Structures are given as C-alpha cells and as structure tokens.
Amino acid sequence: EIVLTQSPATLSLSPGERATLSCRASQSVSSYLAWYQQKPGQAPRLLIYDASNRATGIPARFSGSGSGTDFTLTISSLEPEDFAVYYCQQRSNWPPRVTFGPGTKVDIK
Amino acid sequence: QVQLVQSGAEVKKPGSSVKVSCKASGGTFSSYAISWVRQAPGQGLEWMGGIIPIFGTANYAQKFQGRVTITADESTSTAYMELSSLRSEDTAVYYCARTLGYCSSTSCPNNWFDPWGQGTLVTVSS
Image 1 (cartoon, each protein chain N blue to C red):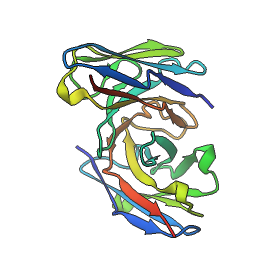
Image 2: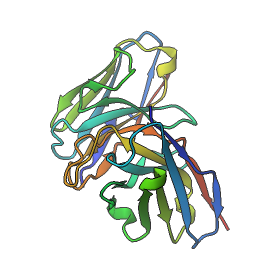
Image 3: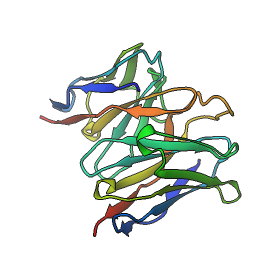
C-alpha cells in the first residue's frame, strides 16, 4: 500500500504570505495526486487533481506541481479564507483504491 | 450540478450495524464511482471503499474488508454504506463523494472526489 506523508504538520503564516506544502509518496504515483482543502465542520473541497490541474472554480493562487514521489501545493498569497487543513490523495487506476495523507494545517501566525 | 445528500446522524451500540445513505440529485449517477470516506474526531481522512453503480462492482480498503458493504440503487440514484460490528473507534463523520469523471468496468481514471456529501455523524457508544 502506498503511504503518503505531508510536511510540515502545521504551517503558521500571515495573510499575503506564500504557503508551500509538501506531499511525499512511498513509491511513485506518477501524476496521480490530488489536493483538498477542509475547513472546520465542512466536507473537503477538491483543489488540484492530476498533480497540477485546478478544479472548477478554484482561484489561480492555488497551484500544484510534482510527479513520481514528490509533490507541492503552493498558495501564492494567502487570503483569510485559506486558513484550513490541506490533504493530499493518491489513486490507483484499477482496482480503484485511494489513500490520503495525514494533512497539513495552515494557521494564522 | 450534482449534489449528494446524506442521511442523518446515528447513535449505535457497540456490536451493532449502521447503514448510511447518499442520494444524488441534479446530475449523472450511474457511470461515476461513489466512494465513502470517514473522519474520526480531530483526525484525517480515511477511504473505506467505493462502487460504480452501473456495474455494481464495489472495492474496499483492506482495513474494512469483511466489515463494510457498499451498494447502490440506480433507480433512486442512491448509494449506501453499511458498517457492521461497530466499536467505539468507528465514531466518525462518514462522507460520500463522487468521482470527478466517468469510470469504466476496468478503469477509473478520474478517481478524484468532487462533489462530497455533507457528512453523517455516526456515534458508537454503550
């Protein structure tokens, strides 16, 4: 089973700053990686899929990069509504199994 | 725009079972996969399994094999997740989510989750 690790566990930043979140896979997942944002009391929201494609309605300040085992989610300039927990997710094509990373919390410094 | 609406909160005794529903409205149901993801209090996301309704094929995470059953009723665009032999560690919010794109009988290339249901809190307590 592929294991995803995320770093850092917590990122303390101020609005307007750049956020860089990392996700590492225990073996290559090609570009089969997504990122989700979750706010307290809400369901997760898909931000990025296939490593670098923004989902519908996601602002351009969110970008994803990477392939193989190392991936990055970048938020170019933090808005107040971006303070949340971010999860990465990988998928296998068939059978369609899924694993999530443990999450990175972005909080206000 | 498809919406997923889940059934309400449940309180269950240890050893019992729970069945949570997820009804899709406003979009295509059958050719997409529906997955179930749970989140224990203060914890991360955990994929339990999924189903492609048009094929009726379900796949489960190894951790839940033998204890979870995922089914779908195409006629009502509703998916179900039943978890048996409940224990206190199963206390969590259970989410359903649809894949971003279609799945075939042998390929699910868009197994990213969008949209999600609102979540169903299942509390297991004696």
